[in-house]
Length: 340
Image 1: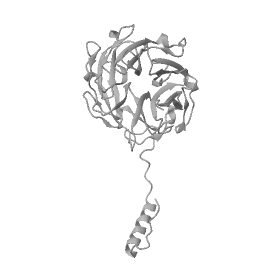
Image 2: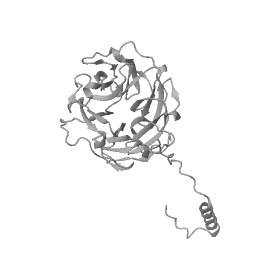
Image 3: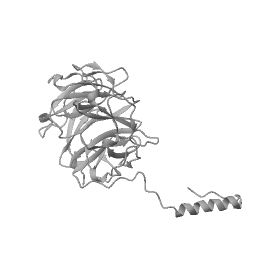
Image 4: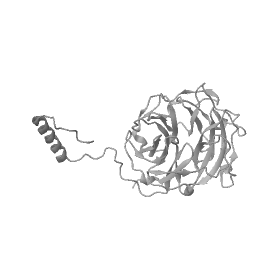
């Protein structure tokens, strides 16, 4: 800020201002409250950030310092305002990404083929050269490994199970695993250990939980009756011991303990409130000692320990996870922390 014109200020006031300026120069600078902790040891895990239209970059996880919950984050994926960040996934450099489109088709891509950039950098298109159809776009991105099955959820709550062998090295790029006539376009995907429960969560913060084995192997079934004006936002594989991180567009989040969210006897029920939120933008099942990563629509990214969020068994509004100024949270992910 420029020093204002003090020509017409009285000598007494001017002397006081100059005294204060002198004292500020003598005062030692405070450490930046947003400065991240020292980074973890070198790791082959990359954080891949992707825009709505498929511009992506990868950055080794150890280059993202830990902040505390509610910090301002650092600038990450550099995209135009018309193409904001929309996906965040952690994957090993030796792994693949599975790019699911809204039409239920999937395209594999080696993580090493994603453009590597510093923490702040522009991405390159993941979709260039793919035979996409009219109105086809990215709907979900997963690492190529992570369990025995992949669970797919549509806009209106239809769920399907895809065995991992169908998504292996023999996968034909563009193969379809979802019919849009079954509950609309694909909206979410997650890995599952092949047993346990499925949690579906909507934009309005409602959810349903049921046993995965109740999903028919062929064709799937209705997993959640979605209210008019709402749609599925995320899916997660859970057990009674699980905690699930839920994130709202306002940057507030909570960890909902599944011990306090009873499973339904069968799929197809209406949703029960998981989190008090205007718009839920992401959900991720947590493992012990994991860190949470959040990226905003303006490309700000924060990393902090999940333990900084109090776990709850009931529906709450959540606590501040990232400081947003004229911005909104866009996506979240979780990944382990390699201690020194």
